[in-house]
View (cartoon, helix red, strand yellow):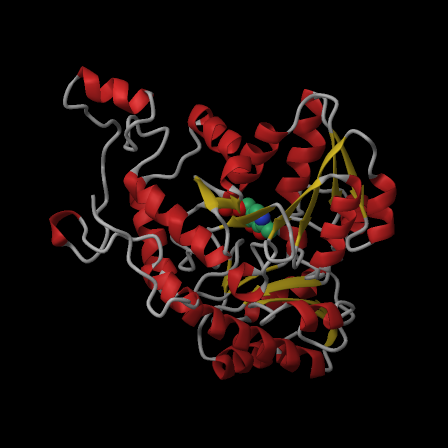
Length: 400
Ligand SMILES: Cc1ncc(COP(=O)(O)O)c(C=O)c1O
């Protein structure tokens, strides 16, 4: 067996971890990079080796649905980046959410979540967990008094994103954890928009941190992945259920994820810089009604963000002034650099009008309830040059 790389100076920083953490120093074939293990199953030398594996005397792979060598490297790297003990990697971010909730909850249990969230997470809780007898309560994002009130003796989990998608509200993680601990309830933060560069939920005492690694962690809009990070013991039932659900990621994808992670810190520096520059530009523009960006003093969670975040991310949400949905769509169609697409956090800038993308199926009443006006635009700033992005937005705004 080869040894893991030692820490570079005893206290490796994020970019060092992004490059080295989780990897063996010597790899098969003396390759510098981890090979892709294209194996559905793993063979045993003899029957005693099978017995040793089952009796947990030997750590190794058995069948691809339970794990593979690439996935383990990625899990160690992601756990190191997040500052957690263990990570469980999934095929997608949604598979991670579903896997965690299915592993942790039983009929009769209750969960409480802040209402600003990725609409499919809400849909799973409200429409599907309910079919298994789990009750979900939604409370207004960042309303800690409402969160306390919603807790009952049956509550098992408090859930939030931070920052939230697409309003970019920022959870006061210490307050969130306090509410959970006072009630003896575990906490989950979906930090997809925050990333381990900008927010550190585990350090604040959160039990589980979840990411759609499809976004900033992988960073190149070329794969789907999800991960949950936390204490190894608490994650063990999640890992076991993943082996039954079959929601493991493929070795090919994991190779791309590992490759993307190498530049994680560099990319985040640019995403943060571009997000801030674009948000400031939009906030000053006469055709913009409102900008949601936690790095702007006008944002309701600016103080919390300044206190708890290292940077504010690449996502900027804004409202076009005096615009109905068609005029807003004309703006989206007029930009030349960002591509019209769902998702966020990749090197390419992406733009979407939530009304016609993620929230098209919702009724106007539901969109009002979720805070999605017709003139809302969500822009995920990639790593292009900020001046080019701003010049492009300027020319597009002149056309509407
Ligand atoms: C905050 C958040 N969580 C979870 C997900 C789901 O991730 P995936 O698309 O990788 O399943 C998304 C996807 O957009 C998201 O924005």
